[in-house]
Length: 96
Image (cartoon, rainbow, N blue to C red; front, side):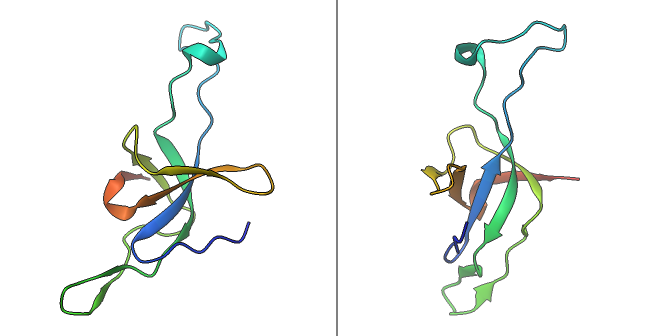
């Protein structure tokens, strides 16, 4: 994969949806919720401020993040990977 996001955008690989509940019940594909956690694959340079300065990104490649349920644009690479491209402001938290 060779994607370089621009400005304050990031590329995220969503984590797989849970296969079963905490009680051990297997979930069919139709009952799985869309994941809201993923791993940052690539980041842009940062947001350009009105003054012309570039604000550096808080997230970096390799971070695990939480994001809004309907954040970003879904893309599929040539290799078949499903990724999200979103703005850094759509990130809710970094998971430590």
